[in-house]
Every structure is written in structure tokens, then in C-alpha cells.
Amino acid sequence: MNTVKKALLVVSFGTSYLQAIENCISPVEQAIGRAAPGFDVYRAFTSEMIIRKLKDVSKIAIPSPGEALQVLAGQGYKVVAVQPTHILAGTEYHDLAREVEAFRTEHPDMKVILGQPLLYENRDYQQTAQALEAWMPKTSGQEVVLLMGHGTEHFSNSSYFALQHYLDQLKTRAVYVANVEAPPVLTEVMAKIKDEGVKKVYLMPFMLVAGDHARNDMAGEDGDSWYNILKSHGFNVQVCLHGLGESEDFQKIYAEKGQWLIEKCGC
Image (tube, rainbow, N blue to C red; front, side, top):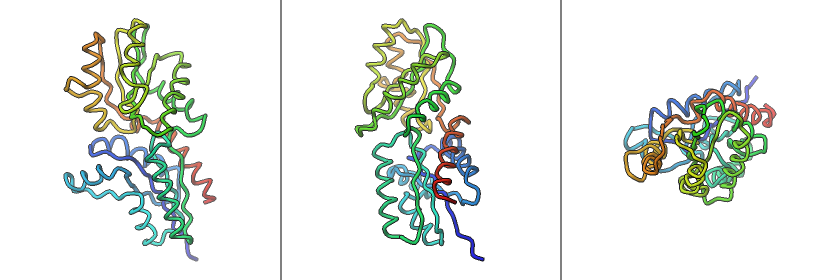
């Protein structure tokens, strides 16, 4: 009796920091894999720049989603569950969706199904806020946690504003989100917390990994890093350099998404 070969392809944006892969991406992949018994787990990254850098600098070959899918087809897999670890349903996620759809068209004999990013349905925002509440430092009256998001010109950037709504409901933390590349930006949030009399800021990445943005744009030594900008405006700043992938609560959220995907596969 032939057994249908089933694969779970976990797709991340990626990072060139090997320690961040080990600390943030691998635990999430393993958690999703445990939720998918009978599936062989594989990895792909969507960032072509990171894939090239890993190959050139670290001699590590990570496939793109399209490359990984072609390899799985060649190895005889008939069912592939593609679970992204992306935060938003933004440009990277929609590019992945198109790639999966094109592959389906080329391989009608295979069942390929795509899962959801972290923030997708309404319940995801509340669940994420609760996981952040457990993950972040506790704050007192003149302290806040400031989360660095990536931001995007894609319409999904509104997800950050939706998340802020749920963060505002937390009773044990004062939390704001600001983005590197789109609103809400640091200057907006900084003006707001200054008006509120905030003295201390805990600075954390709202990203799967504590990679380049977190280490340089957020916590870097240059004068335009968030750390130094906040310091120059009189705030006491403490950096918490940990990606979401290190949190067991976020690993559990991604595992639940993977489990939902497997159930949707009917496998």
C-alpha cells in the first residue's frame, strides 16, 4: 500500500543572522511541525537578498518558496501545506499566494494549500496582544513599551492600527507600535508619549526575528537609530533585543495556524 507523501513548507521572510535563525525561526518551524504529524518539514525564505547573502557569506543554501515547491514535486510529494511566518498579509504574503497559485496550475496532481500570517482574522489581533502582554516587560506609570514594526506601503499596513486598538485594552502594560517604513512612525509616537509624561521606554522589535532592523535601525550605535533618537529626546531607554519567534506563546500561535491549515487540507 502506497503512502501519500506530505510536506509542510514553513516560509519566512528570513534573516542573515544565523543566531536569529536558530533562536527565532527554527523554534517556530519545530512548533508548527509538531502540530502536523505525518508531514515532513521544510524551510523557505521569501527575501531574495537574504537568500543571496546567506549563500555568499555563510555558504548556506535556503530556497525560495517556488524553488522549494519544485523540489518537493520532484521528490514525489502529493500534499504540501505552506505555512508563512510573516506578520501581515502584505506584499510578501500576496507574492507568496501568487507563487502557490501558479504552482498549483502547473501541478494539478498535487494538493497545495496556503496558510495565514500572524495577523489575518479579527481574533488574531486579540491573541497577539495577549501574547505580547506575557512577553513584554511590565511597565509602571511613567514607562511604556515601544514596539518596532516593519511597516509597508501595502494596504495591510492598517493592521498595525488595528493591533494598537487591542494593545490599548491591556491593563498591565502601556504599549505603542511604530514602524520603520510606514505610519505610525517614531516621531508621531514619541510626541504622544512625551505629552503623557513618559520617562522610560522599553524598546522591542515586533518582528519574528531580532535581525537587521532590530539590531541597527532600532538598537544601533548610529545617531539615527531609535535608541539614540529617543535618548536625545530625554527618554531613559532599555533595549529588549528578542524576536517574537523566541516566545513560546507566539510559537503556539503559529502552531495553531499550522494545525488549522492541516485540518483544512483534510489530511
